[in-house]
Image 1: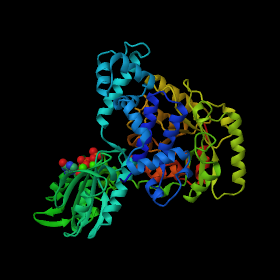
Image 2: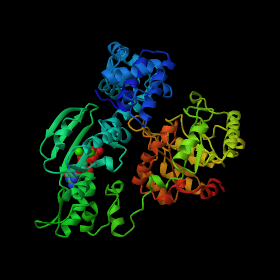
Image 3: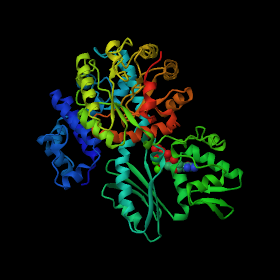
Image 4: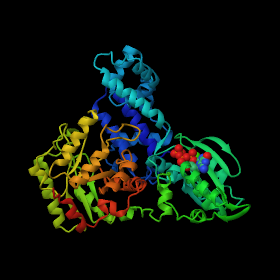
Length: 574
Ligand code: DGT
Ligand code: CA
Ligand code: CA
């Protein structure tokens, strides 16, 4: 039974969920959550670590007991402890826990007093006002539940980009090893770097006698074969991700790649442009009557309608055709353009690695600078820094910088924006830092007006530099808080401060449309890893994907600048 890190992590999270409903010791629950996170972020597959006889207890937060359970899961798909708890708790109760505002206590109350066992029960009870009638629940929570359930209905069955990447990369590598196969590439929304992926669309070129189709449907992780023809097949993997494979000849590669990359809205416009020129575009090529005039490369397809090649992240029919026609397509930012990272944590708070380890890894990526931005005191569960501990960290950074470690560590903090817009540390302390990354971590439910006012006030503080994860959403888990983002963007321009694109796979916050708005307003965006371990720098590629979807060029990105150009920008002049 082949298992990816995301699969193992899901089982560990399930154990944590079950323990939570059973009111188990919070430290025990946290241990499973942390282990799940460690595995999700790991750049190597646990199965291959085990196959090489490596010791899992070397991984952060994984002791002997957890290592044993992980081995069980790899070998059998489960562990006896998980099975036991599954028998004790109805699985649908676990789903209820994932609704913001519903902790184990409330889930138990809902189940005992209203007999609510499933999300459907919950929806019905919320619609008929039976939840607000319970003591300790209230109308606000009921509205929030309804809103959440309705938002979820639209996102059901989709996969986060980074999760889809684990499955896509493994499958692409597997297919590439088939005899007679040329190229294999994941197209569709995956190639356009959308935040979530409905299904995976893989395109391959192959000789007619290649066994690639049979190899595809007999992939270890295939749970069901939904269609299986000569050039087209669809399967469902055990993780429930559906995958389409299309095989075309080499001469059709560009046309097929263009077609299956989409989006549908983009392709419709492209087809119309072709029709106006008396051409027909399909997945096999561009045709004039019966004669193929283009299709071997994507460039040739766009050239046939008089356009330059358009990067996949722009193909949403959001102005890319006009830009292409007028020669003003953006030169999109690339991972290699980043010169540093302006938001990373250490084990002084809830990170897993120390200053030296973070610096060494950032340097190995070729970064010129790394800003250390641990949490502030208000976030007690992360052991956030008070003034005294922060000042001690600044000394430590000075000492490390003096050793000329080959990278400059910048002094920062991820300071909490309090409910009233004050920052969690005094100006006198913040003034000693190179930059201040400020974030909302509490009071997500303020009215739009109050939430906007709160953040505007924080931006007015003299040392405010970057607004971290500006909308607060967690993809598929928590809706953004209600805030007037266009207003915040205009204020950032006025105050000469910046917004973050947080590259964590669950955040990708700022969303693409707001990246573009920031660019139009002349507000620079910082693509930050928010790394909590040395492995997390790998997430930057997803942040770059989001920035590209927002049309950002290197000049629109704060941390594409060398340190000498960055420093003056970090000095607020107002
Ligand atoms: P997803 O899977 O929901 O995340 O989104 P996509 O964009 O991957 O959509 P999907 O898998 O339905 O189709 C993959 C691509 O195939 C799509 O982006 C464009 C192309 N395509 C699919 N259906 C049509 C269609 O009816 N007309 C045209 N022109 N293209 C289509
Ligand atoms: Ca798709
Ligand atoms: Ca598809």
